[in-house]
Amino acid sequence: AARAPDGSHKWTAADAANEVSAAYQFALAVNNGFATCPKGGTATQYLGRLASFGSPSTADVPYQPSCAYFSQIDLNKAYPNATRLRIGSFATFRVDSPGALNRIQEYLANQQAVAFSGPVYQGYGNLSGPTLTDGYFYAGNTPYKGGHGQLLVGYDNTLGAPNLAKGMLLVQNSFGTQWPSAESKAPRGMLYWSYETFLKTQQLA
Image 1 (cartoon, helix red, strand yellow):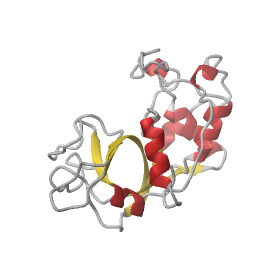
Image 2 (tube, rainbow, N blue to C red; image 1 turned 135 degrees about the vertical axis):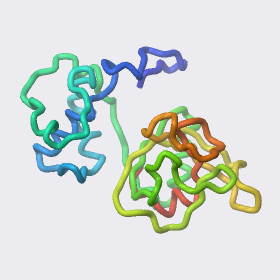
Image 3 (cartoon, rainbow, N blue to C red; image 1 turned 60 degrees about the vertical axis):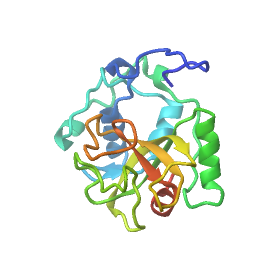
């Protein structure tokens, strides 16, 4: 959203004034009964709200990881610039639906990031990240309880560890550029997930 169709920057996405307020969105979802604190909620309610109304920015309503803080956010306050952070539209599909991988690859080839959510593996949130094989993330089909949203930002059909299946999706996480500290073939803050791992474990894109 921070880039023009030619790839040039329209604004700096790292500035708080240009970021959707996650705190406001979550507080609103809790207030409306679509989420609970600290457990969370489902992804589509936020997308619908962003398409219809936009959002105050993180500069307007900063984030603090505290249920008490969320409950004190003034949800009746007007934010005249909220429509600047609207999204045009969104589509959802299940990761296990027929043709999902091809559809994802088409979006990525068109330079569209694809958000996804699903269960996470135990230890995934540690600074070291999950266990990697030759710098790539291969795993079984039994993830840890709980859910997490991330972004798909690229793919490569030729990448993979020796003697293992080729084909990787480039996943951008929200844990910062120090994650994972384990040796990864992906840029900082990202991981290469094997196609099989992604398709067997994740749920909604």
